[in-house]
Amino acid sequence: MDLQIPEDLERLGDDVELVLFRILQESLTNVHRHSGSKTATVELGADSSTAWLEVRDRGTAHAGPMVILHAGIGITGMRERLRDLSGELQISSDGTGTRVRARIPLAHGASGRKEKTSSAAAF
Image (cartoon, rainbow, N blue to C red; front, side, top):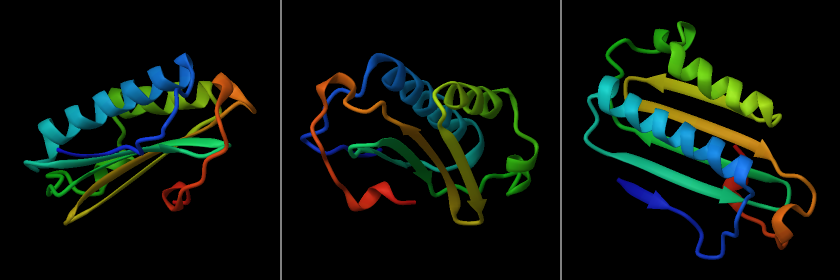
């Protein structure tokens, strides 16, 4: 697994961290169960207004893009967790892999966070 986390990433708050952890957990479970990929790339970041998580694999997603249209309990759970924090989930899949992206708006000044910027914030 390739893990990309900025060294200066500060705490995001318990609720945000728990939701991102659960989404990471479900995403990696899906990579293991469905993709056929031996590797995954995980990127976690935040700026002054948004936290994001992206998980990418290089699998074939045996069921193909239709997996997205027929979301199982895991994907439904991810969407519900994000919705509770006004976040959003994007999933895309093709013959070269699957990408799961979660974004959560951060409360202004949450956890004493400093302003940060990153080019990875825009997706």
